Amino acid sequence: MAQWCNGWRAREAEEAELIQNSKLKTLSSPLTPLLSPPRTAYHKHLVAGCSFPMSYCLNPDCQKPQNRDSAELCRYCGARLLLKDRYRPVKPIGQGGFGRTFLAIDEDKPSKPRCVIKQFLPVNQDAQHLKKAAQLFEREAMRLEELGNHPQIPTLLAYFRQERQQYLVQEFVNGKNLAELLHDEGAFTEAQVRSVLVGLLPVLEFIHAHSVIHRDIKPSNVIQMSGGGAGR
Image 1 (cartoon, helix red, strand yellow):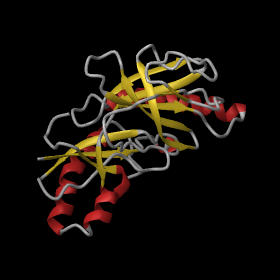
Image 2 (cartoon, helix red, strand yellow; image 1 turned 90 degrees about the vertical axis):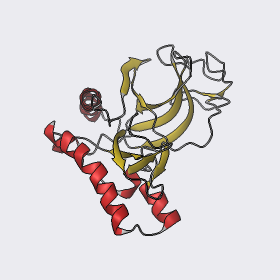
Image 3 (cartoon, helix red, strand yellow; image 1 turned 120 degrees about the horizontal axis):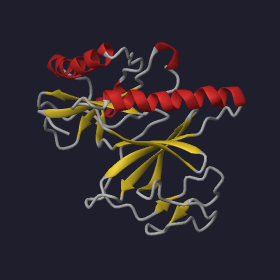
């Protein structure tokens, strides 16, 4: 069984424009490999290779954010590089109107697994907008924690504030997205399309049962997990 994900914006109707950093795991039959992490303007997960020879400073004002992989403080601005003394950002992988997304390493675990950091950093800095957006960002974390209890939804690892910034940390999903595979492989057969839908629809049913609307189902947000298999 190939393992599938869906990059999604789970949100109640009035919040649809904010959440752009979530994923769903679903299953499919063993057809042509089909998917990868979300390729939206905000959230791009796909990363080749497993070696990351640097640390990346998340200070929005830092002009030289690249640092040595073992550094604790940014050599340019002096900001702390580890989030919660645990998560080390290694490279930016997405940016949009509400923030930035980074590939990171969880240094608190022996295997140093990859994860994804979402930094709340709205383009619109109007005070009223910032307050509302910050509330929605926190609500997103609560919603992701609730939905992440499903075995086919990647885990929300952490939500916290550090140096006046809000952050979400989520499980990293590696693979190829449906748009990329359509480009590489061409149009899917009827059986492949049916396989994708059979894998995705039960997870969408679970989301809807929690009063959440996906609102962003598209090829670039459907992911085939690397390695296949039914588990995480």
